[in-house]
Length: 233
Image (cartoon, rainbow, N blue to C red; front, side, top):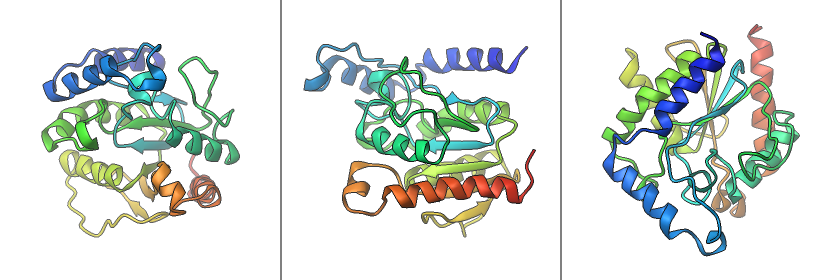
């Protein structure tokens, strides 16, 4: 079975998942109620899969789909202000073919990069329970296992960073308490991948100048330099 076929099968399982009743009810509630500016659109309202270069060496991880971004458009980091900022930076770092991510059919392509979320459904208040995370970690692990070339994981935001740590604690003999979230901080994971912390591209972080284009682009470019430094093939 080809890698593409394996991902097709995995993504079918993700999209049809109904294991977490609270998440299922919430994502469908949002899809029915909608936001005013999207009243004429059909919301996706289902779990979100990852997308990008299946042979990529860098994995970008967010916590979960946005209520009116991924949960509306059907693609993670698509159709909201966080996506607007993120793709402006990815494009400048030459990791995407365009600087926008608006819908699933907009022609977006990623270079040496795959993007996903630790949790596949939007959670109420952006706060999943640990049991919900553990359930979704099964899918997250399948993604990581299939993405055999990945050497660097970039966690977008402290919550996504913490979710990655929880994932490794659940799946490996790993209990390192010295992994502290900081923009640009790098840590070696038990499977020899490198985890890099990155501020989330949220409007709040952008507006308060916690993150800006130069800072984000620098982190992405540095991640590519790490690949060269370690002579990853």
